[in-house]
Image 1 (tube, rainbow, N blue to C red):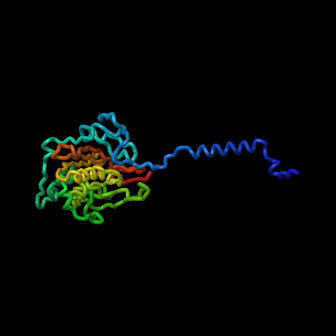
Image 2: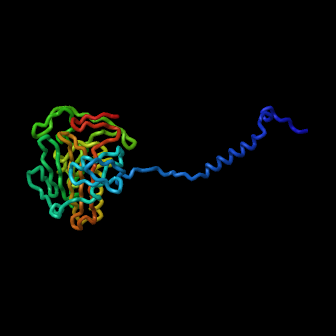
Length: 302
């Protein structure tokens, strides 16, 4: 005699086995579907498309712009992304004249603007803001750099580092410092950095002065920011230790604003006329998710 089926078995529809079989086939099909297990990484050496306002022509390649003047650079609009922090200018070719390319900038004893061979800084302007720096970096200059201090001294105080302070003609005094923590790259970091105009890695302690600093966001300073051209220069010198790299870094401001909108960074190898290195970057002083008042230094997390 056949075994009596349970009440549960009796309640199953006739097409139950067919449905189960179909489900098994679907699961098997998805298990064979190709997947990409690699994580997408930001390539901080490249840039994405930009919106260019009037006066600046857009290159055919995204992330590039033509700019003949500082005013043109200030018209370039940030696209809001980390990768978009850097724009390649004029086909990424530095615009040094032959005379400018071969400048040496010997150090002058007792002159803080020419503190060491190869580095020339600008005096603070009438509003207390740092200006253009010129340099010639070599393996010799880098080899002489000592270990960087854990922090930049309080006496090194660029415009915009404090809010409601005053420039007394020599230095910034008074006011208060506000540096909110922001999320970046999976961690929490301070929004504002004392950003070297010419990097410490090229001339060491000679770069640790107000005239060589701006108030820069973490993104502008090193994420990706100025760390990109600095690493480009360092890599070129290591690959070609007998060459020199001529560099120029120019913070740009709008009107009387205390904090620069960005820096124009050019560098070119001297002996081979740019064969080893030739770059022309505009680097925005911005931070995703933050609204910055460039006039006062105040910031707001959106």
